[in-house]
Amino acid sequence: MCCQDLLISFHRKNVAACAKHYVGDGGTIRGINENNTVISRHGLLSIHMPGYYGAIIKGVSTVMVSFSSWNGVKMHANRELVTGFLKNTLRFRGFVISDWQGIDKITPVRHGNYTYSIQAGINAGIDMVMVPYNYTEFIDGLTYLVKNKFIPISRIDDAVKRILRVKFQIGLFENPYADQSLVHELGSQAHRELAREAVRKSLVLLKNGESADEPLLPLPKKTSKILVAGTYADDLGYQCGGWTIEWQGTSGNNLTIGTTILTAIKNTVDPTTKVVYKENPDVDFVKFNAFSYAIVVVGEPPYAESVGDNLNLTIPQPGPSIITNVCGAVKCVVIVISGRPLVIQPYLPSIDALVAAWLPGTEAKGVADVLFGDYGFTGKLSQTWFKTVEQLPMNYGDGHYDPLFPLGFGLTTEPVKTN
Image 1: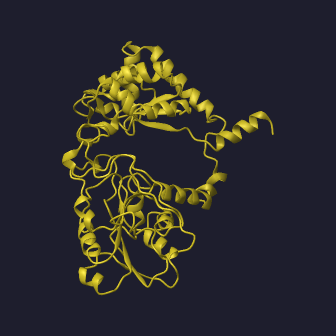
Image 2: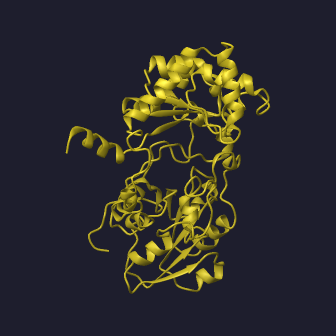
Image 3: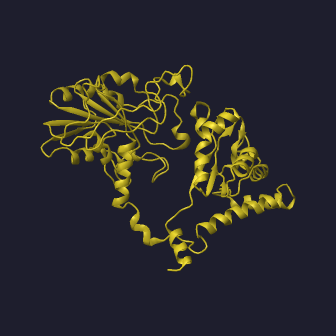
């Protein structure tokens, strides 16, 4: 195989990555999507920028600009940060791309002055503009601005150079279409095993018994009868969340192929252990069935972008009622499916063990792996878990820092050889 063949073979198995959303979109006021991030330059560079430092060092090909603003200036029009810092200071060599209709939102009224928005966005340093609908309007506007020297031709040359560089680097001209011989890799067993490993390593054990001397986890695989409850116990869509196969996500098990937490439990326990699944049991059902223990799976519905804006961050009903009914009557472990910390403090006294499972996706066998001791819990919180939403925003190091569970918290367990 010649050098060119090796190069093409390498490109076919790689993609151009995108780092997004530049920059500070995770620190907006009240956490509202597309809102304003109010912070000093030092704070922006030390808190929100480090992810981009690492991505650029690793050779990321594109960076997408955020809908949000920094101290009142729309990021899509922020020449200081896009050209000045990203391109000139960090020496980013790839191209900068707008978000979906991102330049339309530069003006207070969306698409209110499109010619101005094109000028502001391109001159800020955006190289490729995502125009999903009326692209001829954008082309006409950009052409007018260049011909009349509102946008210098040097800015266009820079954009074209950057875009062509990335296309050459990934071999797009030699291989403009995806290599369909690699389709079998999608959903392959090797990839599912890797995802399963990621699930068990990302789970965070927040509570395990009233004391370290009396842990509930790991659970015994062999016992007479166990209860699995909760609206999220047998739902692939909820496990996957938003921005997966569908934009806003969905509920149910027709979204894709995978294993729900309920199925994973059934496949992990001893064959003699009876698993009873009841989504929303009442107290009497729990009390009079002599369960050895219960596993309750609750959470928040899937979402993406502004649909996820939530100022109360509570677990929707019947989640709280299920926790109360089950955990008040039998030893229980509660698994929370969510994209972020939720209000859990009111229910914590009745919960024997608590697991933050985040959005485990299709490979819930990773959840069962640690619940039943085939592997130990090792995950740590990557963000502070608050007591009440009135505490927010709350950051590690604040003078008033008083979390339910601090940044970096996570109990550990040891795997068991026999269970």
